[in-house]
Length: 187
Image (cartoon, rainbow, N blue to C red; front, top):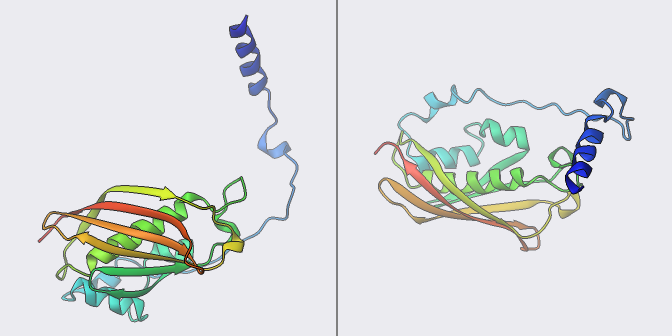
């Protein structure tokens, strides 16, 4: 008997309205933004150490990564073994339950950890994230205000590096924390 109820439930699910028949509940918004050709910047980076590249990016002498423009965050500071990103949560970051999607936090954490490692690398060394482990401790909304993510290198291995990052609000409350493992491809 329980299985026939499931069949009826599934049958009822198939009989839902199409997206076109769902009434609009709010006014549609639009967003326009620009970014620099990410491959064109490679020439300007030739011969620069990772720290020099990150410093020039933070100073506005090199363009921010396209993903930063897409999600609305920016590299604001670097030093050897550390990178800092900041951003302002916005409606376009929201998921259907009215909070910022965890993907924004994960992207900030990954970016900060990866760029922290870049500051320790020689010119032209490539890398990729192998693993990202994140813990989300508080919901983020537009009311959260400006958020800051600081990434640092725990272990700068020759082939595998270990990093961490903290995402905080302007009052210093922890929003998310992550550790990452990065594979150094060259070097």
